[in-house]
Length: 223
Length: 226
Image (cartoon, rainbow over all chains, first blue to last red; front, side, top):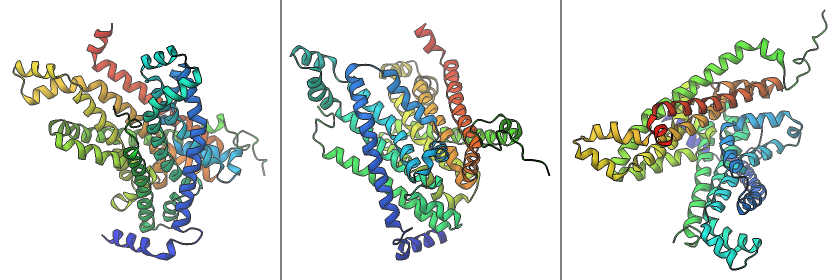
């Protein structure tokens, strides 16, 4: 109970929320990192996955890449990047590591979504004389949207988690509150930071959940 | 005074044979700790997940809360999870194990439940018609048939656990993660690379091992295919 009280005191102290190491700045860093990396990863992964899925090539690659992503420790990649020349560009290693870990779920889900589009619908579109581009944008993409969006959601949650670990390797974001707490041997600060991170991750998940509920039935895969 | 040795350690190279030979004991200890943390947490996770999945299968009302709670746990980033457990466990190996157990629960419960739900209704009815009681039905019919799905979950949970153990370095119990953390602070390239590669090797080896176990304990799947 003592720790809980101390954690509450930490969280309600306005001095911890403002300033260079304050919660608001860390929160903003975390949010910016997540959004920027999500956009970069989508720009890299989605075109590749959509084209590969449209052509029906590279399936083994798209599926295996997410298994490999799971086996490689995020923390190890961050530290490895930190020791390479990339490490000298400030947030460079964090951004590269975040993008590396967000690309696999995006790629795999978008590819699987494209391949699971009913073949007879694709053949009908072909029979109607649609060009490859028309088929991709007017038939396959709308039909595969639910799975593509699931991939974006998984990638977003993954990004929030990875941005937290980035603090271990000196990156910014909410994780810094936790690592600073460990360095000060301040359990209340560690727990307060962890609570903030957990709540942030759950909010991101909830935003996507609500977004999916609000989306038109067709985009949810409803029939 | 002797001149400093001009070997790969002194030049701080990424790949270094001298590192492997001089730090063999440190590496071995880290690998052993890594394996212990991973296996203990996955086994405890399995021991908790199995009853939960069976419960959720028997009482449909329990399925929603069980899946919901484990999914929420999975969303919490690992660093936060370990930190949230700090007041309960202090700086101990138990902290890392507890965090990893919570993560493996999601994957295991979900896969075991999917496996149990996929058992055909006719099979269940046939067993009941042969006079099988609920316990015998579960142990000799439903669980064996759910094995492939459960093993798939176990493989994912194990591989994820191997990679997540490294984050335990924040409390000093991270197996190979400790070496990576220490190597980061001292810019020791060979140590970081060697520990990272060993981590991936352990994950791949564990995956192959579990695939072999699955092959051994599901002889009927082989017979059907062959």
